Length: 398
Image (tube, rainbow, N blue to C red; front, side, top):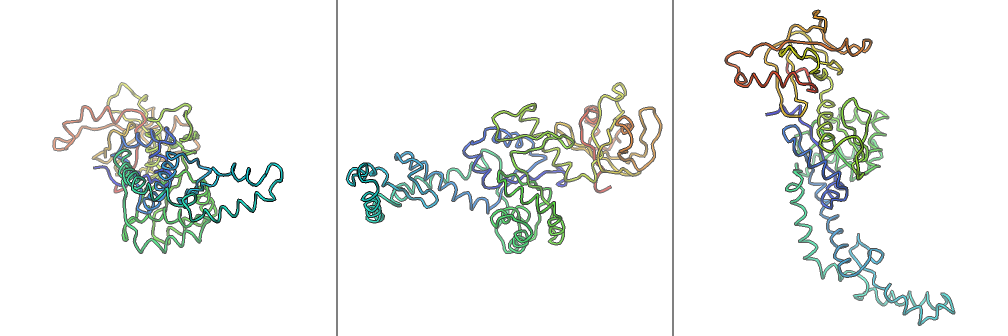
């Protein structure tokens, strides 16, 4: 079982659930499906408040579809009130009766207002289309909801409980974030009354949500707030500006039809790895380099690039570059060497004043004991650890 501290939690707000159900942005759908291939390292989640909003939005969506099927265009709908304005089809008749072409609006305007008042309680205006199609609309809504899990692997977690309100009020008061978005965020962070959600990255397409959150954070308002509330600090990222790898400066727009220079599978994999590093950056040392000492099968090279400092008698934890394994070195590593074979002093850490070559260190994997549960897999394990691109962390319990 993967340590929960090294598993990313990716939350989807209401608008993303809508996009996924409608396949509005195909690259987004592909991205989420690819994320689902790495369930050992990631949870895809939403919450009951997002589901609450989704019911209304899907009802409106399927009302519009029903109206279109009945021959009504969007300009004749008041979709958020589920009503149809059917007077437009009689405009030409009103114009003829009022001699609008000759007399202008003199008789046309009062006649139109009179007719609208008379028709307002008639089938020509109002809610009949909704109620005539209510069972069809709601059956479609109810068929959509299970697809969130069945099609995309997104689980609905948590409850709406009393301990949500005070943190929500605080987030509203410390930022320009709306009440709805504040409740979405807090519902992800506190899915149960006495449980907080760590390692959370909330994905959205709401530009105000993301920018207002970033704005409040840049003013130093949010980290002290979350610390005071005893809640972990989440990341909020917009799907138009997704950063891939940890050290990359490239960003990708999942609303685009084409993603330049990267395929969806690689983007999803690098995205998860970045989130894991961000959540454990104080323990992150760097990545393995398989090109150093390739003929020495037990020599494992690390490019030191992270914030972590390895002290004597600690354990290393390694995550495979393909998110294909999670392994803790079962013994303390008490000697690292540089490329010239010289022993290095502790603590082992990134030296910003030296070139990258001087931030490459090597340790030698020793034989596993006969009673080690991984002894039977040792021949496959050592080459996997030596492979380039693995993520290397200091084990948080060492």
